Amino acid sequence: MLTRHLDADDLRQLLRRLGPEALLREIAAALREDFLRWEQFDKIPRCASHCRQGVIELMPVADGERHAFKYVNGHPGNPALGLPTVMAFGVLSDMATGAPLLLSELTLTTALRTAATSALAAQVLARPDARTMALIGNGAQAEFQALAFMSLVGVRRLRVYDTDRRATAKLLRNLQPYVDAGRLSIEPCASTAEAVQGSDIVTTATADKSHAAILAAGLIAPGMHLNALGGDCPGKTELDPRILQHAHVFVEYAPQSRLEGEIQHMPHDFEVTELWRVLAGQAPGRTHPDQVTVFDSVGFALEDFSALRTLERLAREHELGRLLSLVPAMADPKDLWGWAHGG
Image (cartoon, rainbow, N blue to C red; front, side):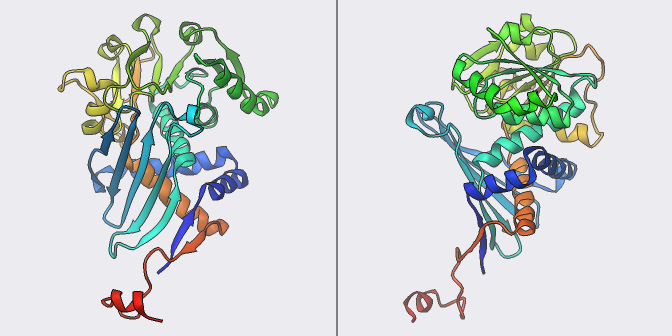
């Protein structure tokens, strides 16, 4: 059998053919479908190997017909070495035979699926009239978050801040076409406090592997929705714990979030709601305009499953990638030695 391989250039080509907004919509649609069949999936928290410099994780999930896993790292010091903070690849396989159907890059795709998941959550958790978003952390995730919230949530105004001014300059440069088209306005700010002031949604996407409180409780106004992305491994947080105590907190998969998310330092019985239950109508999302909601997003394997199955379909439709002999094709499947030593 042959396995389709999508490398980084293939994904870049797909992104350019469809446009980022269309690809975000494709992934968001698959995410919604898969969250709505949450109980069909075999789920476990990801397996992580930590070191002083960062973490390497394996993220498996299966729905009985297909299995997916992602290899992903998080090394905040990598940019100084000329490497991305996050690097990833993944495999989608047939459960009936175990045959790998797709081997794909997931570095670019992770940014897309993370942004699509954030927007999907905000559709049910943010106020319907939310149009201004603070974007704290203007690194590799920032443009994807901005476009997802613009396209899928209706955000029209960004207030942006990063301790690294070069990151903010990069963000402004990359999003300039959307500003020129009148679809976004972007306001660089001198601090987190300035960026948060007057914002309906606050997205935090910082990379430092430490217990931090870059968003203080005193900055939170009634009715805000917080999209917290950076607290995604043990020992790494972004929010003042007092924010969580006075907010309604939503997560992807509670057993994993209690280990890695913003709620890792909260009591084990701290009440949270899994996002799939809101999407399925089994639990309320936002219940009042003044309610503060938090999406404590750590990234979950189901999201990569949704992205991989979307990529597999789009790659076939657009004839992208190449077919690999990842598994030996043998006349006699029991004679591996004969295949290896044959003519």
